[in-house]
Length: 303
Image 1: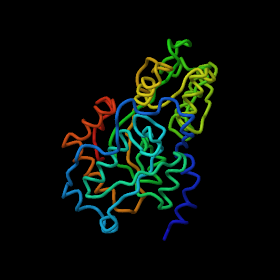
Image 2: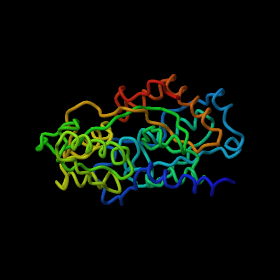
Image 3: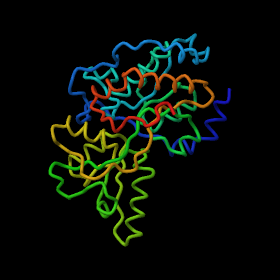
């Protein structure tokens, strides 16, 4: 086993490229789906060609363990029973497994520990709105299934007149979830743009979960919150108007991928399953169910 070697060689990079943990259910703000939902999508037929690519280890086991941080609606969250993980990613992961003739075991994991756990072999793959970045590709393989970009959440009425424009954010305090692309790359880059332009840097306030960042915004501890624009729109709707998406274009749109541990041999099978789910209309149906706009569809699904 190369488990220990992998962890030692990549630990620092994994910590720098993960995401965050989730909070206690009692602390959540608007992360419960506003309609009846389950992790079981409409019936998905096995794709024999894709299933034929599944390594023998997984065929004999019959399951894949899928890690996700269930605090990021509409992609992954807990149902009202606080046990069942639901959302677009939950159903899509289940559908990917079904295409391969397997069952998905969804595991709730703190986002900042997902990649470490993946490298250590605790999970087979991870689907938790991971932006595909060169740094992450050094330690895991990806199969693209969506695309997304960042936006800014603001309180009702946008009292600070913010928008998704780096120069407008200068001097403001912006929340983000620890370990996200927004926290690691985008807010620091925006801060530098501000100072290079002779303005005050944007101040990043980082929180252990998306829920904590949302609560900080709702309680006026920060001026705005930076996260996936689709997630902001959905969560704002569920919050009963406690926050909304600020105007402006999506910031740095990039692919979203399913992360796989290197060397498992699963990448080709998962890629084929993703392509099949686009082709048979499953992706479109799930997107409509979870209010994911077509603009989030991957230009090259399965890449």
